[in-house]
Image (cartoon, one colour):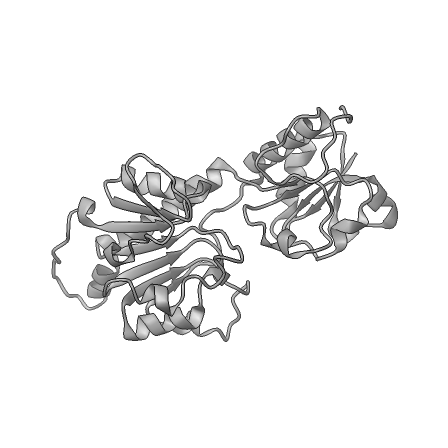
Length: 312
């Protein structure tokens, strides 16, 4: 058995080290070093934003392990092989994303940006705040990411509203679904929606226009869920007061993007949830063992053909 590794330029070395420790007898081939003979050996692909069509060139492939939670790249590739496709959902990444969301909720609720500006002006002034339980945060998307974010915010005393396409009950969270989206109540909106045909460009002028004046938008999902021009317009003319963007339609974000220069936008380079190879590799290797033993891997995005006659 051999493994194909392509983390799209994001620290292949850490993954190589972790896999060498967990699977010392297995070959791990970087995509850049692939040869026709090695393609014959590969049984598992560990990839992120892999070139379309390439995975069809591995005749003995048993499963595709995505090195992230998003599935849009394989979903859009008609040549994706009919094998199980597995998302990477590392609890440490989920917790990091929840901490990122909490940081920005605290930042805007407690007006730390205002106080930073006052310091630069040697200006002393306190501002009245609403209590945390009166500061309403709407989490869009209650999958694994959204639930973790919502729980963390609720545990810190914030009023959390959660919306998903389907009803999702969550302790401490006021849940909504379908057409019932409580935008008018939200002081902040945190987008945790996956990118699908239904959510592409979902956060547009019409949706943003339903927010109250002064609302804040935080995007830790995918850039294409937003219409960038509509976000800029909502910042310039209302109702948005600030936006925090961590994911973009094109990454790295081009230097000529107007998002960089807008005074009311905070930009981070898709780092709200960092993947730690040491912990994440254990999840990947556990799934390899499950497949080799004829067991169901998890979390399964696309079942594909699955056989149980390959034992370690």
